[in-house]
Image (cartoon, rainbow, N blue to C red; front, side, top):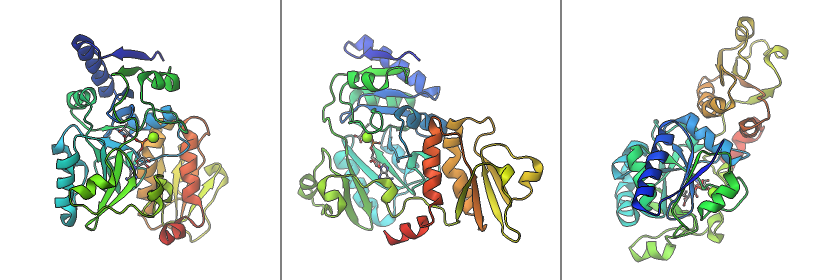
Length: 343
Ligand code: TXA
Ligand code: MG
């Protein structure tokens, strides 16, 4: 794939870049856009397959929840369900810091695909103040999921050239608006039960929050500025039902009197299916991107059935397959559920 780098220096260049980015996003593509913090790798947040491409491009070894960038304030309550108790605080914070480098983790609404939140019940939302980003997301008319535009394990890009160095040939477009203003990622907070907790330190500081009458909690693992890996969050998704990974359905039969559900990679034959209480096929057309987009949703659906066992068939370990296997292995860990309760 050829990666174009479009400047936004003159008004004409900028109009052209915004139009190209918007058209690509509407086609479900991933494009790199400047924000006021770092460059982001954006895709349609409500299109699970487009979001799966973000993980593929970044080569993340596992799925991390993404920040959803809203076109405007009207989108807040379409994406997040504001708890009555925290509503006033959330709206005040939004008034104060949006648009800007400030992200709130809030209970998610159903319309947000599971792959965006890595199976969490919460969604991270912000409104970017970058004029080019703002223009693109408004022209697009829907929220954009966007992590930093680096490959996994590298630092966040603050220029279009950094993005090109990392992602040349993997995405169709990088929109260049010069170096980013903040150069570090947005401050992330959770607002829960009347309390604000800083999960990631960033341009909006604890002092600033205190200055306007909030009492953020900054002790705990986030005090030293490190982000809590979502895999360690107590609410991180792990099925309640025991999960077993198998190489192929052909070589597996559930024990008598045990109800099992199947998460399949290869579409099973009718006799193979008949051994299971329920079957979900990750991708009928064997597309890992579609499989990744479906993974969390199917796991949840099978978990809700109350069967004795979920059997998950191994997927090929290329491309997004590794990310899928990482999630499955985590879900299959014998202490998965216990670990979640303890933390
Ligand atoms: O400034 C920024 O925030 C940039 C620009 C592009 O907006 N984005 C960014 O995204 O830094 P990313 O994916 O590199 O980092 C987002 C962080 C991750 O560490 C993720 O774990 C955390 O946000 N996060 C996202 N959703 C979360 C949730 N529901 N609960 C807890 N943490 C969450
Ligand atoms: Mg990042």
